[in-house]
Amino acid sequence: QVQLVESGGGLVQAGGSLRLSCAASGRTFSGHSMAWFRQAPGKEREFVARITWSGGSTSYADSVKGRFAISADNAKNTVYLQMNSLKFEDTAVYYCAARRYAFVSWEYWGQGTQVTVST
Image (cartoon, rainbow, N blue to C red; front, top):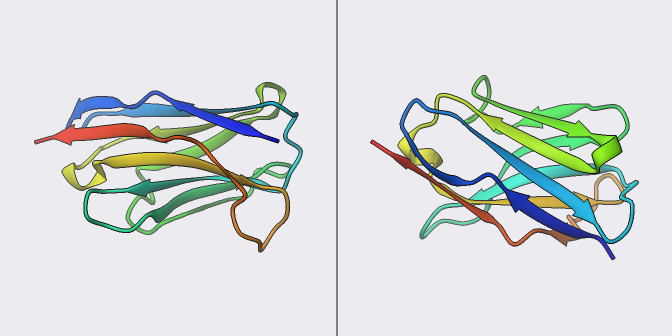
């Protein structure tokens, strides 16, 4: 079983930056990819960014392209989400997810970390 623990959320002013971390523990994660999702109040959970564990291939939601960057440190079993030029609409609970294989549902989820952007 893999446990995912997010950290780094908080309150930031619009235009500011935050870096989220997601540490995988319990078993060395050697799966296919990890991702960040977010859920704002009253809205469905949405995809933010993804990275493949081996090759570092990334993809982003259009709403965060050019502002957010996902990266991975395989040695630390940790994925990061660098968020720059934050907007009020980025306010949400951010979740880390992982899966062992491509093109399957995300199998493991973290508990989430709150990001609040003030105007």
